[in-house]
Image (cartoon, rainbow, N blue to C red):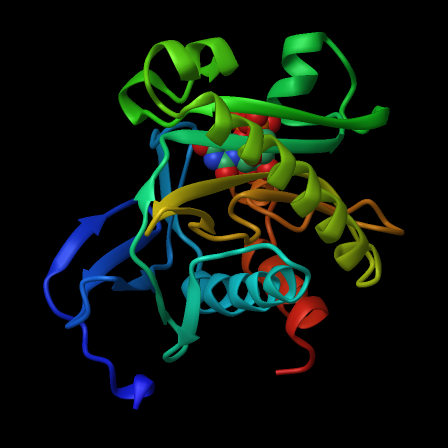
Length: 240
Ligand code: UDP
């Protein structure tokens, strides 16, 4: 019955996904595009079949998180590019978890990419494209009404829990989870994990070779972008 769920009007179009309404106001359809962007939309391009890979990879990860006690928006995958999810009121705070120094952390602290850390780091960013997603802390979040103190505590607790679960999950699949970004939203009085978890918003390094298998290949023109997304797909979802 679910699989026939029809998409109605478009509610929102982002850089990598489109959100459609359904007959049920509590449910929406996430449609995954192949469009890729980086550096706050300055670099644009296409990664062939990225939408299919990210949809499937994200759903496998969300299912695993649900099985391990993390409440998420996932309802049901419809097809290669579409998934029914609970309609969230997105909290405009991006939660970033880090296990190894890379990206903006390397820059901010003047450290070499790949520097090991004793414990994971959690960071908050204000989800606002016009401002370029600036880094914020809990005082900004409270003062400017992005979330309550109680919600912040929940985001932090869930962030570390998701990181712990995913670090092990990826390690078992020969992938080093360097860092990643997650988003949460409110739904019927609950906070659920939303958006997606895919090579677009994570840094994945091959456990043995250290090779990058994520959007950094697109960001920095490293080549073999499609090939590495496919490799992640194979490691997470098994042989096609
Ligand atoms: N990230 C993301 N969306 C953003 C910013 C960051 O998905 O708007 C992800 C990014 O892919 C990486 C992690 O969050 O896995 C940490 O990103 P970082 O702060 O190093 O920023 P970046 O180097 O991506 O500018």
